[in-house]
Image (cartoon, rainbow, N blue to C red; front, side, top):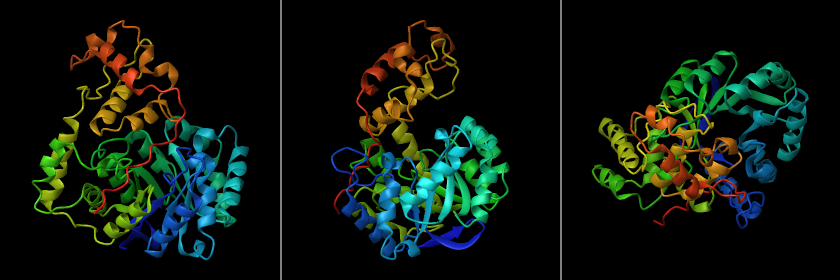
Length: 397
């Protein structure tokens, strides 16, 4: 296992972190974790050098933290630093901070959480918990020894990210969506550089884009690009190496669902460090991205000229979800992103379109927006509750 600096702290973190959000389950019930196998996986990772474990109050319908608490018995708690998260979306009053945090300590069977994150911040959620006094509350917990350090995870635009970073001088980590397909999305590369420049550790979530960048066989246009590389690696290793090649990154989280994934990811993390890619290889990722995007059926550029829609349809987001589902051949993931707990609200979904065609006059790409909205809704909509889609198992070597 290779280790990397963790922001301002005098501590080295394993390049690979264990994300406890896609643990093996029984059937498809996300609340029924396969406890013996999940514990075996977590302990294997720790035994092979992983020293950062990420969970959250909401993962696996509240059962992820419970499982982590069990997995860290028998001396494993002393070998790992735990990160978990306050669900900012659920906070309705300041008293919720203590209620949720105390429950998390019980679930995790610990008296201290090493890294406590404000979870999934976007502008409105950040302003709400900020105004409820979350920073003052957290500092009180730090002074009592119940929280080690404070951080946040993020899902919004760069300007909001910068606002959050600048709002508090003692952030220790920022957890961001970051992979070679999303380097310009949300906080993006600009956010990575900005936070790292202030000594904040960068924790990467979705380095494999929920497993999509590790799927095999890869689409033919993408395979043709990979085949031009002088070195041969599996897609999963290329994706990890792109992240770990960058010195600003502290740790990349992987939500592993099988022991085979744990074994392979630990192996990759032992040989992929900063500067492990050539300049030509780094440049080639742009071509891989273009190859994937060539598979998108809707030529939407997310310019957002089509919004606001009179019926409140979130047109660009619908198109992005549908394009991703087709591009990565993963309609189940698309249905989760469309219908799931953090999906598109019902009053903003594609079926709210009434065909007024106001958007057609605004679209510079001349997309037949009402027709594509109808098709996207037909393929994405599901009234069956579902948990997050697990990444596919790795192809046997």
